[in-house]
Image 1 (cartoon, one colour):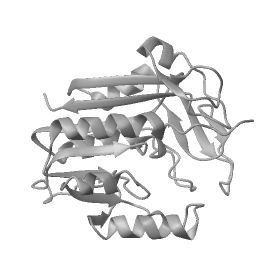
Image 2: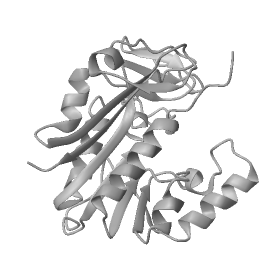
Image 3: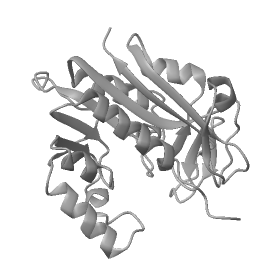
Image 4: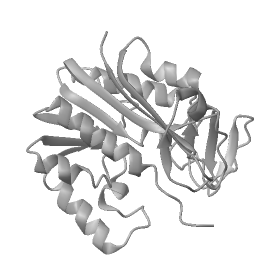
Amino acid sequence: MSEVISERTVEVPWLMDTIRSIGPKELLDVGYAGGWYLEDILDMGISCYGLDSDVGRISGGTLKVDDKKKAEWTKIAERMITCIADITKYPEDGQDDLSFPVVMCISTIEHIVPCGYQNDSALDMESDITAANNMKKLVADGGSFMLTFPCGVEHFFYNRCRKTPLDHPKFIEGNYDLMVYGKERIDRLVGDWKVVDKKFWTRQSGVASSFEECDEDVALSKVPIANIPVQSVCAIRMMAP
């Protein structure tokens, strides 16, 4: 099989165009570890805050990347203000005064899956929805909340490296914990917030091919496969009602 084209090829250009159009002085990236695009945002003079729950990911320790990339990520993180926290539990009481004109979560929400991030934690079928609702609490009045994630016919994949195989009718063994969003769950991520922009892309000429912009119905009709679950991608910018 030829090299798999990453969904970042469409997510990041959309993100950068959106950031330029908003022109915020600061933003928060949830699940920022490994976000090489943050260097370009920092170079725009925007103050970047980052929140991530995995210390190993922040240092590159739990990702299969070379030392050069780890050093690049560390250099980017040193230019940011960062926090280690679990977004399904953050912000806590007393932290409601924290707010940002832009809160973004790029290709991360799909990994906050009900079976826990690549571990044996108990099932919580609302973990990603809880995370999205908590992120909304961090958006300033008049601010924007931006998400990108894989979409298609709804599937839940669990990491085949789990110590205990997951015996659940909704979950399929895969390379890592990942959720592919169908329409109903996308609507739940949005809730009563106003959608300002929504884009869809899908692989047009093969399961590993490049992405092209498409209609929502086309993107959501794609059935993911275990080895390459991301067959369609959705990007949403929303604002508080």
